[in-house]
Image (cartoon, rainbow, N blue to C red):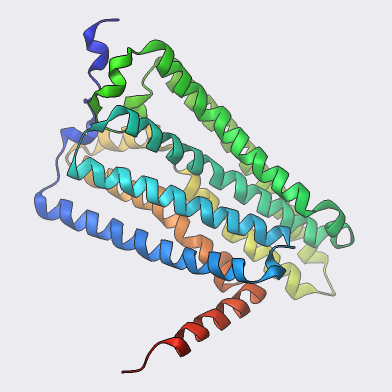
Length: 313
């Protein structure tokens, strides 16, 4: 293995630099969005934790898993974003740890959304069998499957870098980006194949569940409002899913856009980051925290309680 294998600092992200004012503005925007979303999500987690009614409903268990996953994903991705501006290069071992967690949680989101769509479909189309099919035990088992599938996608990259790169790499400093850290051709090819598989399976699941709920809404006479609400929820899942899926087509799309608009490369990367990494995490509180009547009721009680306990000046 020659010394050139340690040249991990080359990146298109470094080719085009932001001006100091632009860099500060982008970091302030990202941090403000991250803190706001994590605060809202933290409120949702506290509401879930305080009321046992949510522990017994697979829908809310999947939702709160999505919220916790989003908080981890948002924290790690924003950490990488800020590090890229403040330090530019960081220790390779730390980079590997952060990137692995970021990829884990990024892949978890669309899988979790697909399961939530299936649960919604069962609740609408098979209401009498919902309690039998959607049990608490099966819900936690499926959450374990989500993490296992994500692990199967990223952990081979970690083992490959351990097998093919010299040990001194993990003591070096690098620009922390997935395609720079896991740059082996096998890793890149495996990433593309796994993204295609994930993309196909998740969208197939979403379309099938939406169509079945749509037809149920067309034929519904009783509980029509409930069916239409479920259809709208799955549509919101679909929009959130679409934004999450931007991560899967990111390498090709960013390459094309950077080629077409080289002068605006750094701004394109920033807009893409907001759309693919932050905006989908903003939608999670809206889908259930604000639209779901049961969760909204308990959330309102919690917020009113906080308001009452605030000391008056």
